[in-house]
Length: 216
Image (tube, rainbow, N blue to C red; front, side):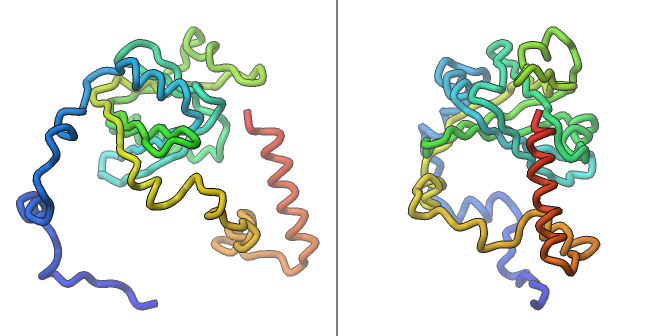
């Protein structure tokens, strides 16, 4: 595949050029941003079992990390403060390291079956305060730390993206078996897959067993 190179005549490089392509922002959309979590935002967060966390390091290298748990796992500490438990993962710690150097974060809350989403922006820091962590126990496992987000901006996001993608439509679900397993993909990308199908099957089974042991 040839490397793509953009035609510089068609690169949008300033806000004026960008806005000239679109109608003026809808007045309601312009006014919908809140500076605190109202009752509707709080209700949405309590229903959500899934949030994506966008972070950046000091060099503006971006990262988005998915986080999931039983609905309501993100705790509302007050109208301007959220706490997100950090569960066992691959220990890369990308989001957490980014927060240490650049506290600006963006959150996208998703509720299964809802086409609209909730966006929350703010500034984050990390804590291991037992008083915060104890309320986040799942299956008697207390997280090692929590991401605290001081909320600066809150707004609902419309349903267009989810409706275009038909994300919740079972007729659009794809067969995961049409792609290789996660283990095989990672081995292809790194050290190479084993030649034996039985060995590959064993590696896949080990990953599933690890999920069972280390989810919490």
